[in-house]
Image 1 (cartoon, rainbow, N blue to C red):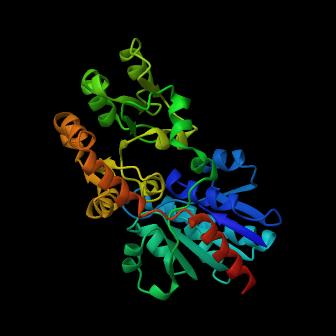
Image 2: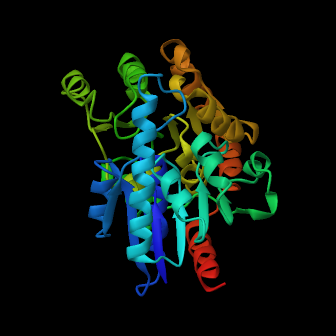
Length: 355
């Protein structure tokens, strides 16, 4: 089978597609098409997959001055896509979002296409791509309501990396040098970090370390500031700018405080990990929908960014000092797990290629 993956722009679209490639058989030929100079190029190279870059740009929400140039880029991307399809001749294509997929979708109308929608509510690019897709894979059942052609929608779950799923609680605690006697809190803001979360952690850290162990993933932007502020703290505080072994952090943690990007729909349920979710204010709508889904199922609570400094410590104590509530949240989160999501999407791609 010849599979063309077209995804880029953010990790939210790139990582699920990379995860699906892990589940494809060795005789599957894969070509990744992304944007010229896109952040995805490095990630795809690390996975040893061939990469072609095309031109692309957004047209929604851009200024009048930018619009003509962006339309030209899309037009150029369309003709580059036509050439890629002529050279590669894929049996099936997979999209996960990003404006780079629009010219490829238009150029490949005759090729069978699967769209994966990571967040519960699709953005404009994904809604546009859905019109050209033969199958639409979604993380949760609630997403079905955002698409008019519901018969095309398959609820697969959010794809999880294999290396994420290998950790046990005991192995994870040993990895960080933690005791099993005190609860572990994980703070994470993604690869760049979340400055408001980092500031809130530093403000309450002395109180936290009296009764908890802490894993603090700062992201790169605030790493030096956090490192200098926490230089002499005990082993019960572990800070990293970035952690490749995220599975260890999830497996060790009893509670996570984070933004509410699409990965929370797959990763936290797999580990049965209760969460305090702080939607990013500038991506409020999509993250708020994700957070609300977990809150409505009593697996998480929502804390608005503006209240981090004043309410975070109390919210943490309310959960971790109440064992009955903590166990209820764990069970509620665990019931949402769909660990076979990547395999299901891979199976759909094979079915489409053969059919």
